[in-house]
Image (cartoon, rainbow, N blue to C red; front, top):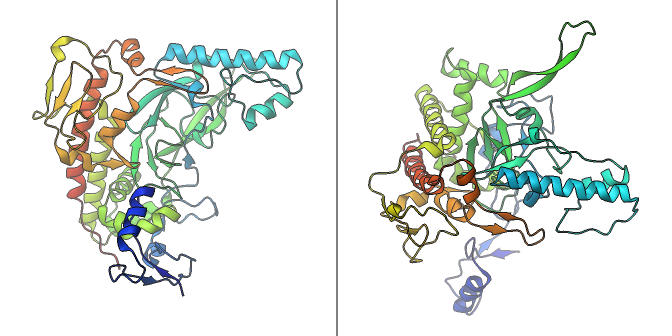
Length: 444
């Protein structure tokens, strides 16, 4: 017999020990012991809900012949560089320098003929892929065409060097974002085994593996490379990309049977995004979402389908266009007349009061609605993601500096970070409103 008492999640070591100390004895009646019995899946605690298995999988890569899913099996993990300090930066100029420096260092090692090179961690991140390339004496080359914008963390955009030469794992991302000018939307979700509560975020930029923790990204489209003849004397060929639907024909037919012939694949894509925000869904299937990719129901009422799809479109508009959302009129900003918008690290002047943010020594943002902090993504409120990411950082191993103020200078937008903070406050409040108005879900 195994007896179990849950003292709560996300507690520090000291908090756990304090609770145990106060109980004094396992015989304390306040310790409401539960006798554990595993379910069919082998879960002893946080047991999965049997209803979840009756829903339709978001995707299935284990069985690519399974067409009875929402998405075709070309969904992907986000980009894994294994050398973020070199491959990401707020400054395009510094990114170019960092990449060229590490490539030159690597090529010099090959040219030296060393069999076991003495490596300088300030010049290179020596990963398995680099070791394999070194053994095969493969040199690397730099091209500015590989530099593009990426969503590094929620509501944090940086430049990235998107090249197989420098990225450890690209997964299926070259199918989803094959070229800079290719448009696409992806629904990023927290991956299986995430230590944080389930969350989702849509982006039209290349996502990092940890935009959401070990996330999976489900695209509206994927692209298939096709060689097209140019019709020249020598019959030259040029690579072009044919756009394919990420949503399956199976789920479109099911939705049309249930909700009417006007349902298109975009409607379904936004239905998925809306439903993944449902608090009913997240709470009922919290254990399942930590252990499996999402499976989604098709709601009974056509009105509810369209409500989720409409909400998904509204959420997508907020989350894709987060930079352009207007500041809330009630939020006060003091000190902008100083013209000093350089930021080192934003903070809360009083730890118990999140209605005020000290942007820098001259600028202060106050009267922030506290409900804005209810929009939590990847374990942290959207506002606090902006505060955490938009600060000066120096990588310990490489010594590389990543300064968000470089982005504002190179784009000639001195107020960019301040306006971003104000916009994300708006995004947070509006997201909370939309989520609260979602239809209810009945679950057993």
